[in-house]
Length: 319
Image (cartoon, rainbow, N blue to C red; front, side, top):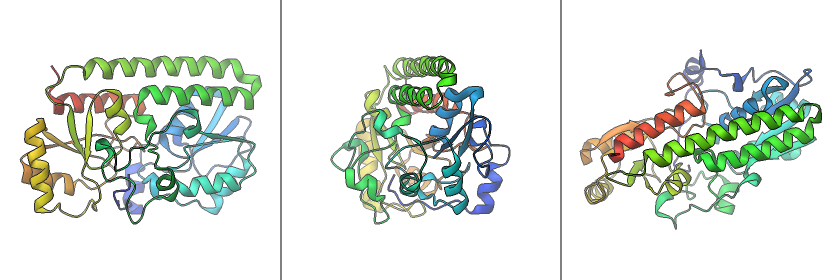
């Protein structure tokens, strides 16, 4: 994640967001005090959980707009007021320092930290699958300090663990609708278990187990399904990889049967395409699901994860 990345210009971001607003990112300018259970979520994976579990009883707003890079989010005065008026805040500590700070300072009664609902691991420089992460000059202090990788939503099993914890928190905070929250949570967990089974079966027999990615977000996913992520991290997405780095990756690609360099929708594909051209590899999208825009391969978490599975099966030579 600490690959330095550029924010999409505001005009482009708003253009990308047109027609791409999901129920989860309802009008983020809206304030609390509706007749529903008001939940402010930090970014898309948290908003999706709140929307799925809250169902008809919850009014969910997201602090991160579609097309906005969540790591770089700054909280506006209006959003701070929105947090103060909400019934609950759902966020992932360590991913967005500005959100962590704003939630800590607010008097909101129910603060749900998704990071506390599952086990976060250290995928720092010691691990092959998260190489280079956590050492950018523009690093995120909370994450660097703890060395914990926050990208847990890309592992359906860990995401299901978080969903169960969120469901219990909703039941406690809004007991009048506890039965519905429990039912909605069970339905979501069942779907996530199904997604996990799809990934397990779909990636069981592949020609290669190694994939290259621009953004080191997929360590949990790689670990869950016996794969190795090699991130082209430590460089600006706009810069071109050095000749030495291209040679190194080309050699690894040959040794491990790597065919594809993955990039993501919210970041420039220039680096991935340069490396792919020089190392004679293909490019494709592997979406870290930090937001949904009209460039996403699907309208929600499940559709985009299924698209990710297909992309991995193709790149890894699933049999």
